[in-house]
Amino acid sequence: MRQTQLFTKTRREAPSDEVAKNAQLLVRAGFVHKEIAGVYSYLPLGLRTLNKIVQIIREEMNAIGGQELVMTALQDKDLWSRTDRWDDAKVDNWFKTTFKSGGETGLGITHEEPLTRIMTDHISSYRDLPVYAYQFQNKFRNELRAKSGIMRGKEFMMKDLYSFSKDETEHAVFYAEAREAYKKVFERAGIGSRTYVTFASGGIFSEFSEEFQTVSDAGEDTIYIDEEKGIAINKEVYNDETINKLGLSKESLIEKKAIEAGNIFNLGTRFSDVLGLTYTDETGTKKPVVMGSYGIGPTRLMGIIVEALGDDKGLVWPIQVAPFTYHLVSLGHNGDEVSKAADALYDELTRKGVEVLYDDRDLRAGEKFAESDLLGMPYRIVVGRDGVATDQFEVVNRSTGDVVKKSRAEILAL
Ligand code: ATP
Ligand code: MG
Image 1 (tube, rainbow, N blue to C red):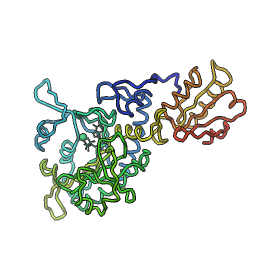
Image 2 (image 1 turned 180 degrees about the vertical axis):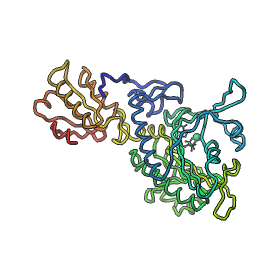
Image 3 (image 1 turned 30 degrees about the vertical axis):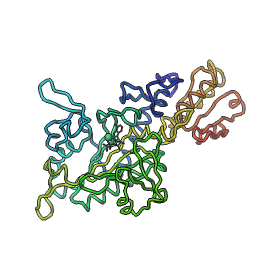
Image 4 (image 1 turned 120 degrees about the horizontal axis):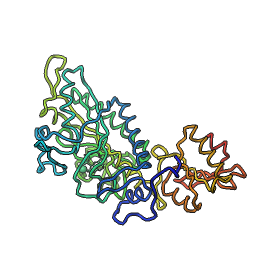
């Protein structure tokens, strides 16, 4: 993509009302636009990153048998009343409104209820199980805190997967697979080394739920990490009993601030009992389906990556989620020799299918480099007069600052 064609502009200063590093950098770089507190639009560069995160998650969910669907944002009050999750006294973060034709509705905060009901049309026998279904969808939650930028939105994207199994044994097999799939997601998104499986409060059907917590000063949670074992305990269940049960010792646990990137939950039969999701087993006996839920916030994940890797110059994207792999910066002017060489290199790279953002604008070099640092593509290729003359172009690694010189042929072979 040519920057002369890109409508978004960057800003030198962070907007004064943004306190979170992720929002400050993403707004400055023109990746997102803040509509109202905690509500963000995703502009072309931001959307490219978000789509890459979504695709990584999609591939890992498909690899463990997930089937993708998409449910509605508008919710059925009667359905949620049956599970006792409609009343504001029980769930305090609904956005509710009314139909002109009468009656109330709300914007989906999560989707256990609608999917369980959908499954009553499709699951009736043990032959229909297990089933794993997931979606990417914007959720709406009237969150009180809006200090974390895109990490805590009132409207945000969630990947929510739900598993439907015959019994706890079958459930446990998938639950373990989901845990491994989640590890792969965070690894591929570039935050694997600072993300820990964290034991947290579980609800009614299992002693613990497991959260994937990424260490970050901007985090709202406190966790206690055992570095060697690579696991952690959330403060909410941090006590001697839990520490013993998990075979850990207090001395080796380090307290850190962290942010939840995802979680996996055993729901047992909480929803299937109430909403009548049953199946007939091999002996003809009717049984409730055993469920699990597995969430990741792709928009939050984007914010976490910015918090973890961004530096004083701007965004720093890991290759797998960068909007473009290369930022080709031309130092040419008005169609001179340098501009022509940069144009040709851009055309050849794009023809090869390489993702390149091409700064073909007529601006000062210093301005272009500062903006390139802010946008944070993994590698910057600089095409200047010397480079064209000697066929040696600077390739700058955004993350390490390392500079290597490569010829045109070497760049095309990258
Ligand atoms: P938190 O404790 O941080 O509010 P949660 O327990 O409410 O999270 P879930 O309801 O399980 O989270 O949602 C699943 C995933 O969706 C979370 O792990 C997180 O990645 C993401 N998520 C939850 N709330 C938000 C939000 N307000 N903005 C962005 N992402 C969110
Ligand atoms: Mg929450």
